[in-house]
Amino acid sequence: MINLVSAATSVPKNVFKTTELVGSLMHKLTPELINTISGLGVDQRYSALENYPDFLCGKPKIATSSTTELAVAATKRCIHEWGGDPNRIGLLIAATNTPDQMLPCLASEIMGRTHGLLSRSLRTVGMQAQGCSVLLKSIEVAQWYLAANPGQLAIVVMAEVHTPFAAPLLREEYCGYREILKLRKDRRLNVEQFEQQKLDTTFVIQSMLFGDGAVAILLGSEEGKPAFGPISHLTNDQPNDMNLLTMTSNSSHPFLNGRPQYFMQPNVPMRGAHYAVTTVKNVLQHPDSPVSDLAEVDDCLIHTGSKKILDGVCSQLDLNPESQKVHGSYQVLERYGNLSSASTGFMLAEKDEWSGPAMVVGFGVGFAASAGIMNFN
Image (cartoon, rainbow, N blue to C red; front, side, top):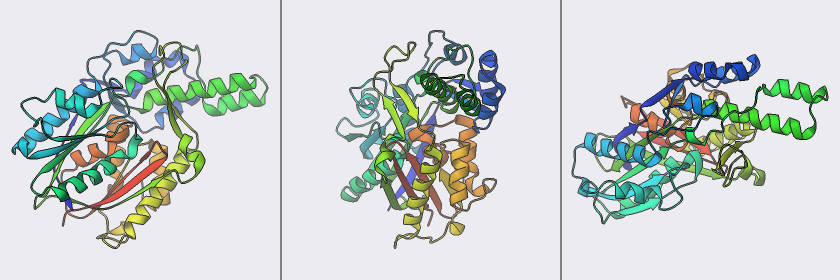
């Protein structure tokens, strides 16, 4: 068992309401697509771009922060709020799906900007490109290290800057999926046009769904702090699940200049719910689990895929989406958007009170999922 000693977040200074983004693109979006955007469950998101609405309309991007800068800020804040001796930290684990550069990894970049704070001799582990379920995997790695090094601590950092990866919306009009399907049925679109318009609509939704932010979590053995209990993992349950979420290394989109581009298959909500439910059930059945039923859990902290995905997971777990038990998940989605690897970390950092156990659930690229119990006692 290891404890959550301290947690802190960092976000860019630029925040944009969904209504603001839709307003800047109103002339391009059909009413049906606007309704779809409104149903994502995202009220606002923070962006590393100070001109995100203009960027979506085709203007050059103006960045004011980066993945590494957010990661460093969260790390420093986490250690400062803890108030202990940083020399006790013997391991740094850092993960991102949106690195500033391919090499070196985020962990090395954090080390490069924390001279005088983190020991130069601590171990570093990079866990990049592992999607949205990497937090609990990182915590498990930290558990192994701390078991072998009593008295030391580990810090886990998740940082994402998604908005600069959004595809600028250059078409004159973007339709909802049902509208595109009707156009195809009416033979007003050929197969190639049909697939392209579906892809373009996906780009619109992704530009409204994701946000930027970082979280740092300090782990150790301290009484009176919530502890991580059994953790369960599931990866690539069906062979085709590997391609549910993918990112090209070299986009063909004319405005992305060869940068990576993210793709999400339509059946992600259904498969994501399956992965989440399977790992949660495995945790509840674990002989070391302090609970055997979600009714005994105070909170379910579920990755913020989208409102549709959260609703699907809640439905399969027999949870009321309006209940206090899942309030933190919907609230993080509403305030920050989909934060990928950092989403459940934000929920942990913003959880003010710990009394009973909590279930943490992440799922994403791989396709993979992880679930684990946090127990205050």
